[in-house]
Length: 298
Image (cartoon, rainbow, N blue to C red):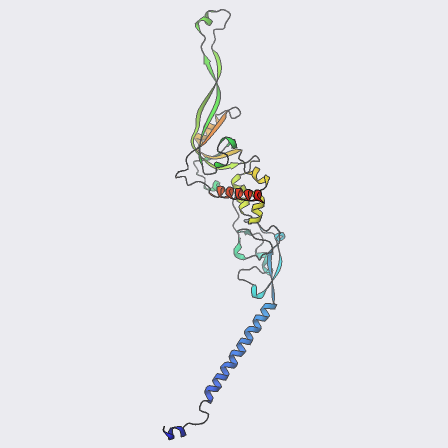
């Protein structure tokens, strides 16, 4: 070993590095302390926010009013972007809920919309060459709950008519009988609509069954289950009339029928290639069956 090289090492040559290391450590400690202090502060600080007030929640597409909203508190550390703070409650009033909002949960700006919900949306897309026609319907005599909006049906009408009958020769020679033409009552069945589209169905109160289903679909799962297993709901989805998308010619044919005495027969046509079906209706019916069966087992 070179003894001279050892003699040339100056004491304290690593001092700058030691100072830098100490300074870095001090900065890390200070930053960590400030961060922890802020976290602790956020954990203690609360923010006033808007929460859902009704115990049953707010259905989808409902107009928000002051009665539906109340002040809630949340820790600043739990506050999320897009939450509505209570000082901005005025900005969400008279807006519509985009979907079901559960009780006592925070309201977010992106849960709301200014677009007013449209009832019977299909009316707005109805062809200008067609009209809406309502015909009485017997739920039990045409497929029960098989028939749904979007189906095509064939409609036959049976009516009573007078058939004029010429008198026989024997009767004509009898002075005690009139020689006039006699008439007899006969029944005649003919096709009223060979193929016509069912756009909706009406219950005994004249309410749209499709809209009844839509209203229930807006509820939360528990509320929906309770509603759909009730007797009132079951009655509200029994069809008493069919709503057709008809041509003017079809409307005229129906108008010439004696509706008070005529009997209508409905038959469902094939669904192959039919893209008009509203699939959410059978889905909801399956849910109802599942809930009813589960209640029976309990």
